[in-house]
Image (cartoon, rainbow, N blue to C red; front, side, top):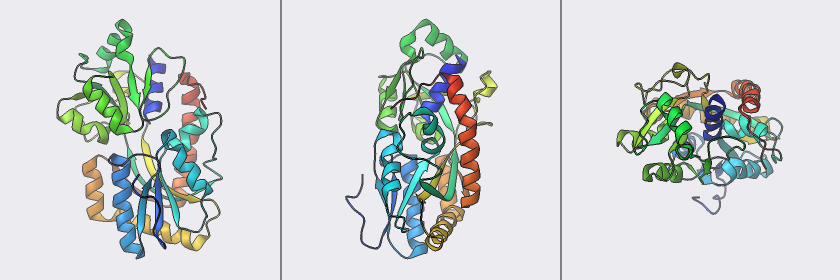
Length: 304
């Protein structure tokens, strides 16, 4: 069952046709409305005020974020295009896709580490399990209860069935409607469903309990050696000169350290960080090295 839960956790981890002249594009590989989009727009708006020029979020959705990464990789490294992405596209996808069309370490330059986040295993209100142990037993007796959703690619060769969705919002809609039994998503994204009684959180991925769900034990507390903190960060295409990189980095970090914006992020369930490029590079390499063995141990097969 450890392999199943680890695989679920791994799996769980378009607004403008074009940018205005003189503007900066922040390309995000996920749909409008979810946590990543809200974070991107809050940071972009603050950067606009700091830099004195338009900073526009462009939702370039597809392939679990890979389309956005590929687009930024191909962009001119002139300081007008940035990538906002979660850690999975940089630290997990290189281990789980056989033909990834970008290299996180050579095709991008770190700009700023923006926030940490935790994921939660949630089940629909129609699922009788009240704890992770009860859910595990339920899936053993009724494999259909092992249908789970995520916004990313799934895995092969496991006893549970991954149901892919094009974003967090449709996955949560399916969970609330009883179309699937479970989902691995950001704690911040499932919070509304949990508070309204349409879903139930059974476990969280952090080393400590999530402030949004202080009553919900971590995976580790429940006997499963699973722990992971995700993050959102900003990158630029490789080759960007140092002056625009420094300017953009300072603007992004100023946004995260703004008390008002920080308060909004905490209320959303994020943990603001605001780390500089060198620290982001260190964190990315550490997580890349950490998740490779976990992915291999989980039985996840490299996809396309």
